[in-house]
Length: 146
Image (tube, rainbow, N blue to C red; front, side, top):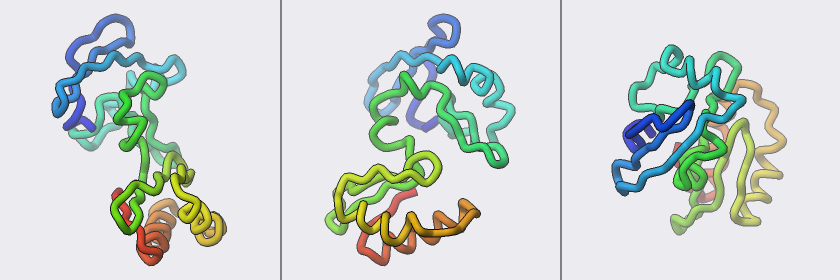
């Protein structure tokens, strides 16, 4: 997302004007009160220069955290704040995997598959879990973007 959004202006304490460099649209975002400490230390933790300037990367067992979650741009709400984007066989969005293994399904078929094949998985390693889930989804005819 660092390749999509750029900070244009710091408007005040923990408030920023950002620009979507593809659409030219500006957004005002504010650091969530409970994430100020994460925002202040995000650059120390980053290993990916093209990451979103408001993303605090995953650290050990702690997941990544959007520090402007409450005021994030619409495009982040729709697509980018997810681990997996799932499309059906015709390329239509069927669902997203958000946060820690949470499905936001847009079809009953995907929800049924998730309940019967994914929710019952007993895999503790996140990387292994993702690989298994992607395999299940692909075998069922879905396309998965990471």
